Image (cartoon, rainbow, N blue to C red; front, side, top):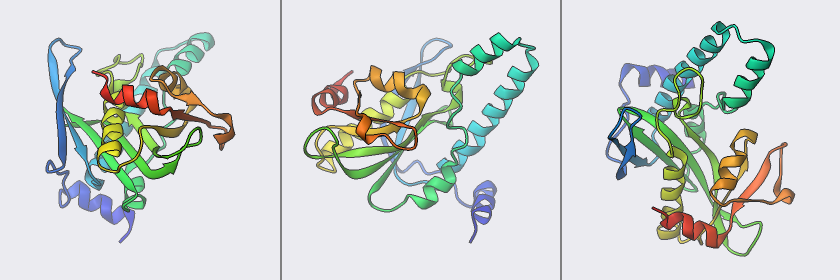
Length: 227
């Protein structure tokens, strides 16, 4: 069976996203006022991954068309392109789900208003590069493109990646028996976020022109318990 065959099955509804893997519910502030309930799902689910590809891809195409139609001068265009975060727009979540479904991987999806608002894939165990003990490694984490700063619609929800990483941190400690801490290789435009939540750069771990970041144990423990 090819990936195209799987896509056809998903598009036909033969394979649908499941709600049986909800592990947490919470509230996010709505830009329209009030709050919106989110559901955090834990588990391998190619159907949710496929919805990420379809809905996020449509938004990114519409965003680029919007930017093209604004008649920005060169300076304005550079400023807009520097602002938006689309360096992960080529990620294919369905393909990733089909190749990362063994026991050392864990999938997390944050759903709200019927759409995936964010996704995260972790690998474990991973030796810490800055201290002793095993931690987990973030293979991929992303918020839906409408949850990032953009000139077309503004940001819909904030804190998506934080919710996902906080749950993963507590899960890794509680269920996987790893010590507090996690690591990743950061896309350039995400570096400020990772520094902001307490991760530190460790240059010897850099690869493929991506900077290696790790959350120290004490910082990760605080992050996991933060409100």
